[in-house]
Image 1 (cartoon, rainbow, N blue to C red):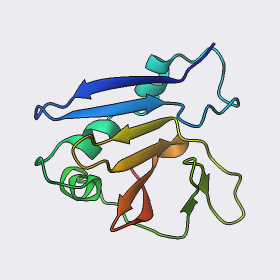
Image 2 (cartoon, rainbow, N blue to C red):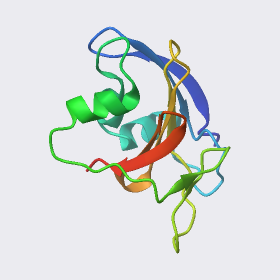
Image 3 (cartoon, one colour):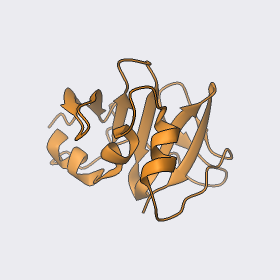
Length: 129
């Protein structure tokens, strides 16, 4: 089963965003997982990333919306395809890519509630669990 799909969604604030499930076409995900399953797996993270003022970055939205404490890091690297690399860990494929059509900013959601966002031209990561 192909669990790669592009979709458009609207946040509670009325802002639209584009989502892509399994954006790297990773074959290691359970083939029974549908695009809807991958979106559900991401939980509230897409809303945390996207709800905010029209001009906000994904980083600003996370900082404003996620009240349970998080810390941005830059030790992980995100390659051109969106794969997450961290020293001494196996690479992780994103389950979801979110694109802000107004700013063309991208964010990736990975297993284990890991999130990568672009901030001033570089990737930063956090965990939202």
